[in-house]
Structures are given as C-alpha cells and as structure tokens.
Image (cartoon, rainbow, N blue to C red; front, side):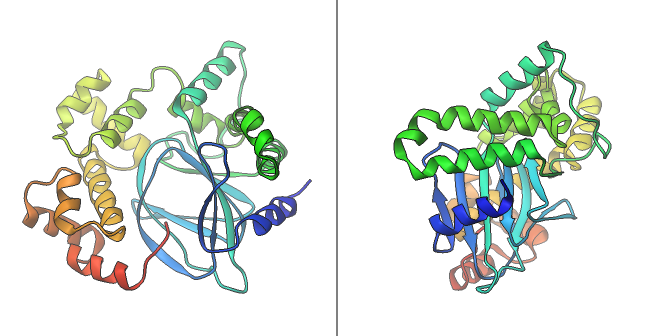
Length: 297
C-alpha cells in the first residue's frame, strides 16, 4: 500500500487537466499539467490531497505549500488564493479534493468525544488559523486508497461510497489535523456556525453585530475569537469572501455587474475600488486576463 498506488489510480482515471467526479458525493479528482499562479478562490470545508507535484494556498499573506507528504485541511469556508505554480507536462499535478460534510463530521466528532477519544497533540498552537497542513499517516493513506478503489465498479461505489468516505473522515479526525478539525465540527463552535452563515448569505447585508449576536458573544469577544480562528477580522473576512467569490464568478464568464450584485454590492464603484485594492486589478482587467488565460483553483 503506498501513495504510488493512489497515483496510478489517478493517472488511469483522469487524462486531461481539470476536475473529474468519482461517483462518491464530494470526492473529486483533479489534474494540472501547466503552471497556474495563485488566484482568488473560496475553499469550502474540504481536504485536498496531492499525490504528484505540489499545490499552493495563500491565506491572509501566509503561504501553504503541500505535496504528497502533507494534505491541506480546511474545515470552514475560507477565502484563499490557490494555484499550481510548478505543474508541467513532464510532471503533472494529480490530487483529490474531498468535501467535508458538516453533519457527518459533527456526528463523528461527537461520537469520539462521547467515547473519551483523545486525538494526538497538535504540533502547532490550536489558535492556527483557517487551514492546517497535516502529514499523511497510515490510517489516512489506507482510507483514501480504499475510497478511490471504488471507482473501478459503479455498484461498489454506490453501495460502499458513503461508508468509505466516513472512514476517511474518521482518519482525518484522528490524524495530525484532528484537534483542529474537531474544533470546527465539534458541538458549540459558534465561530464555525458564523462562518457557515456568512458563506451562505453573501448576497445579503451582513452586520458584525448580527454575527456576534448569532454567536452569542459580545462584539469584542466575537472579534477576538473570530480573528484567532481565521487570522482575519470579521469585516476583512466578509469582504474577502465576497471579492473572492466575485473573482471566481467573473472568471467563469459572469459579467462584472452581475458578479458584484451576486455577492452583495450595490455600488459598482465601491466594488471596483475594493476589488482592485485586494486583487491588484480592476474587475474589468481581471475579466480580460481570465478570458485570455483561464485558471483552475
């Protein structure tokens, strides 16, 4: 059993750059053979495992580079920049994106807590921030391989997919990122619930006071705990989520005006000004550049 087996599975299944659904809900294969610079993206709760090549994610100025030795764990929606700057035709990037189902992860976290399960101590402070890199261990490797092996048979995939995915979730919760993930999915995590609410309501007015009330905290306590969990203030987070979502919509072909309205902006000039401040280009320049050179996050 090895990463090489997983790599061979992916090489035999995905032959062109882009994304490929596996048949298991939330499990997607990806391939890239051209370098893609880091561009705005929004990571919904997920784990990203690279089996060949390397991938980068930038969150609030901090760069995370990971390959087949570490996977990226992002247990809450986060505005990032992501890319594959080292991919090439000679050495394509192959990887797996696994969405984390909030209900299943919460159930597993609760079951582990009820049995008195203790995850390994984190090597970094628990206050780290939005995303975490974790080394592949045998449990993660085994569970991921067993999950991907289902793709060879549609009946196996339909019957066993959910169980194998749950097994992988359990391996993540037991692994190096386990405490970090359980903080997000465990009972009573008001910050994670607040982030989920923001992610689902970007087109509506979002008040920091309302976020604090929803979390059951004073504004000052909420601000402190939110920044501890995400590295960003609530205002900065909401703005980054909106602008990154808009950038992705524009890259996908949506007009600048539609994208701005879709993420809650009513003033085109304010949208253009804040977009350029964050991304270094006006929305129109961004749109022109994406149409000339489409990117995959």
